[in-house]
Length: 367
Image 1: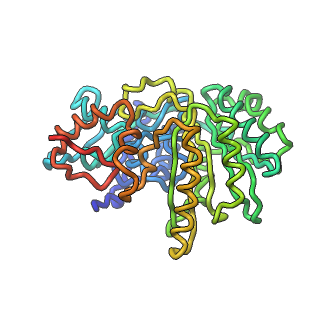
Image 2: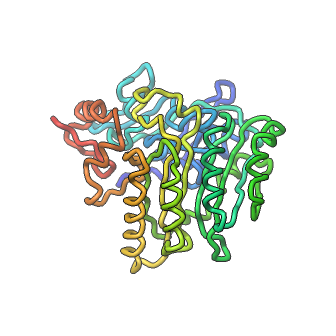
């Protein structure tokens, strides 16, 4: 393993509205520096997430409705490829490799720094609304309709989770990045529906929004993820989740819909290596538990749920969520890269023909 954790510098150019960040930085590091100038870019939903893995895999996040994915905001990168060469890549330098870095994962080398386009992001209107599980069908149906109708300024997450007092609930998280008065009007139907058990939506600093789900992903816990893209949240999918969630083995686990974002949807399928631009959301189950002896129970439950949900999905995973164990299979990895897979293989043949970088969601060379 090559550990870049010591490389966490973030340098902001507020005039050009760009930031250059080293490959070991987290989004917490990045947001702390850019928000000094009232700037930010799309960067996940957990502050402890590394910028590298998220960006190279595509990069969903709260700001994607207005500004696209993290990879859409990448304007240059420095990468050490398998031949030991340091290359600076951008739209004008090694454009083929630059294309591949925006969704192709860690298949082509070690990215030591990333340069991003920044955007004005002041206080946002954001937070989580909770509804009782007895109203889960109505709440998730409402969420589906709400997510398809919102303007670019909003992005959303809908989830089933267990509250701190052990009660299953429906959670809808939102982030409105724009005029706060206008945001109040846009989010009013969400806050009026129900009525909710709790309404935590309020004007908030963007750095704070990025920590909303931090408590769900604590270092040292056990984790197993499954996910799949969805063009539409069907009634059947909602029914499966509601039926199965009460049997989830851990109160720390959750199932969710994470919206891709309207701006992300408008990028062409072949413009970047991340191809699933017609997806409404990424559906997923994040299994979280504490006891290593219980690994099989949680993994099997999550796999069973993923198989039950697969008929309602696009059949293609979010590549960073595909595990590296052998049973995941080459076909699932190929589907995750979608229409761009063969072009990515050609890039692999050029930049890593011996498959040096293979402990990943691997694109195997053919030379």
